Length: 585
Image (spheres, rainbow, N blue to C red):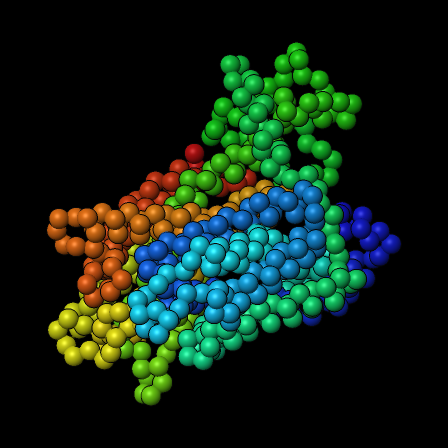
């Protein structure tokens, strides 16, 4: 990274580069703030919008949101590849910002223009609840598609682009990067709070057109700020994608699959490392030994005068092989995040429907159903400094480890809390439904079904647990990927986290559809997930997810015991049993 910046600004000293970074920060932070306000303000209340304005059934709406969220989280992997290999971060962010603005404008128009959404239920135009026409749904999905393209470019590039503005080889550059990261996460929290309260309130209680128009205007301001600073930015040129090196190792190992490995591979295999190679040198490991075959030197392999392989698709260095092993070791751990996030996804879909059929009044004020989700972010935000300043020092004294517990232990704790989240959610839903059936109700929900007299504030404990779970697992995941991936794959490492969430969204949508179809046609019990939650068994669905989470935790323990950290030969167990110790393999 430092070499690339020097190539771009060869006549400028590191201090000048950092000065330019300081000048660029107001534009980048402003762009980040308004972009998040626009994006989160548009997406945070989609469940209510689809069910109340587009008259889409709750099961279909939940499935659609899961598919949309899944694709939105999967897109950054492609975005990172295109940015690193072809366009560079500035051009990728520029195109993605325009796409996001266009997508928000399209969705705003579906609310503002009556012909772009079906008539409201109960109006003279429609005595029955009529769903959207094909053209109305196609226009809405066009907006979703543009938002997906925008997220694919913005998510993998925004943090890295901000860090590009400083030279990390200098003290002032390090301070600048740290300051940027602090402001980045502050603006994220700020955006969630504003979107989850003010913007959601406008959407639910004033006007959907105005409530969706505000995020569009904020995104427009974001674009203006981004392009206003274009002459100041450090623009790192695209380079060869690190995924090419991964493909080379897999292809070369496949071509030499019938060869026998030498007895001492670390001494006899191809071990060339280019001068000034940016990645840290990795020792040889005995996991995934079949990949070592890509480094076997045969009579057909030719070596260049600088020591590199003439054909990298036939002969790879042991450094390349070990970097691919790092990636492959992470994949089983990553797979556990898919089931983990299913529990968190429910707090943004069915928890909103629970709130719609609960008493949301605080005195004379009615809290918008989607606003309850801010309690997850509040608990996460409050817990992070407590964990950093109090819990870690306390655990450090007990365990002697620098961070108190290992990253895998932290992630495992988050999985346990996600299971607890689902169990609490099931108990609360069972109580809410009992109140609706046995006690006086307080009205009818927008989609039908009576509103339980139980206060929606009882949903707060499950949302707090979800936030604490993310503080352990999600943040632990991001740090884990960042540290365990090779240095040149860190943009992909950031996308890896979003891919796990994408898998969770797809799995959640699949589970909702399958459970709905099976229980709808079942001989006993009836539909678990009907339009009216009072007639269903949402608590059973939550118990099922808790059971999957428990199985996932057992799988995570096995993978953690097997896992070997990058650059060393220690195997750290995620959840050490009492009296056990880390051991060397």
